[in-house]
Each structure stands twice: as structure tokens, then as C-alpha cells.
Length: 207
Image (tube, rainbow, N blue to C red; front, side, top):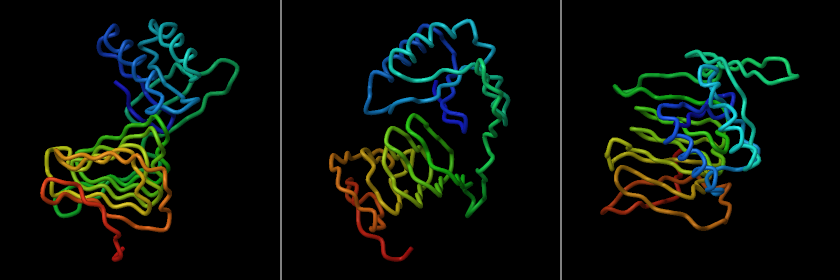
């Protein structure tokens, strides 16, 4: 029900009662969401605005009513001019070896969740509280924290590569591991892959 876009985190309502309960539960998990997140509610769902506003206010976040089209988000806030964001202003898709690769040239903020049926390349940081989910490989040219899932279709042969792999949860195919260390490894390029049903993380020297 939550989708990361350039304007913030979009709330997509399918079943109001179930979605608002899930929304509050996810905000209660402070390890997933940071502070002062911009949540966006589609104008067609404005009847639920006050209900969601009570929750966002409770946890110190923001809620905006928006006009949402496939490619453009227009954020509407009282006493402020409208701001325009493009969902794909810095993203592009390339086809490599029969699998599409989504290239994201920006930092992925806390609360954003990006899922793609292909490879994902991020030129920027992956902040704590964000999620990347790819059916293929994941490459992060920056500091990688948050949650990373490669091989979402169940392929354990996919890999994760990052300039600084500090994700608190890594999943490849059906195998996952957690990282409780707070140690920064900003100068080490690392590769994560599956071997003997375990995720192995090694220094990568051939980037």
C-alpha cells in the first residue's frame, strides 16, 4: 500500500480498514520509518485524509493531498505553492542481456520502497528505513543501509554489490541475513551472494 515516489511516500488505498490498520502498524515500527516523512494521499481518496492525518501527526510525519498521474505528482499543501515532481525525472530503464535494469540517480530516503521486475542500480545512498526489491541483481554506488532484496522471484544466483554494504537486512532469493553491526565500512566495496544456502559477503576488488 506504500510506494516510494520523488515527492515522498504514496499511500495507495485498496481496502480502507485494512490499509489504515497496516499503515499505523508500520509507523509504530520506528526502525522502519525515520522522522518527518512526507506521505502523499491521492485526491480521489480525500475522504480518508483526516483519518490518515491523525496517524501521521501522532508519529511526527507529514501528510499531503495530491493530484496523481502515472508520471507526475503534484503536491498540494495549504499556504504553499504547488510543487511538481516527476516519478522518473532521474530514473531510466535499459535492457541488458534480456533483463531490464532500472537506474535510479538519487538517494533513496527513509520510508521509500522500490520494487522492480529486473535489476536495480542506485547511483546514490540507500538510507535506513528504505527498501529495494529486485527480481534481478542490485548495485548501489553509495552507502547501502535499509533492506535489500535481490532475486525476488526466488533466484538464489543473483547478487548485491555496494560501495558500503551496511544494510540491516539482506535477502537473496529465499535466503536472508540480518546485520546488527553499526560499524561503517565506507571505503570497502562488497559483494553479497549465496553459497551453500548461506549469504556470503566478501570484499570486491574488480569494480
